Image (cartoon, rainbow, N blue to C red; front, side):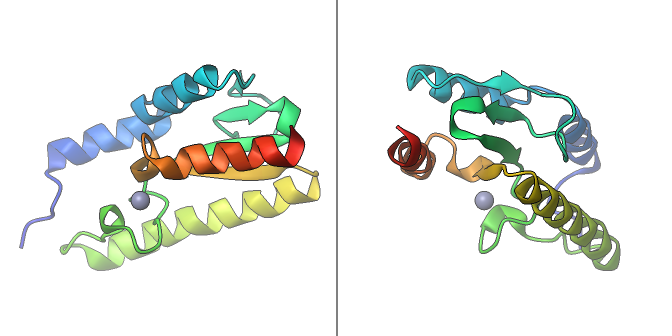
Length: 137
Ligand SMILES: [Zn+2]
């Protein structure tokens, strides 16, 4: 049975995961600007190279693709039906790496805001942001 992503689509996804300023990331920044929340893009010297930092909230933001970072209970995170073993190892390594960095970040005193790509443009993201405002505002 064929993967649910074609090879072409997959290599496009691969290039997206490495590139800065992906479309979801741009959307998140647009929302931050709308809420007048100051952010910095791609700060150096922070573990895990977060996509965005919100200095006022002492928070780092990761914009995660649901598939690559295995969003729990999300249909976008389904593992392809071929090469299952390969994907399991690969994706598990991503998840492990995320955990390692979140541990390091917390140790440095950062709060972590994960924005899943499936949440962008939905109330979930807005709720997460207004929660930050309440905590610090
Ligand atoms: Zn998701």
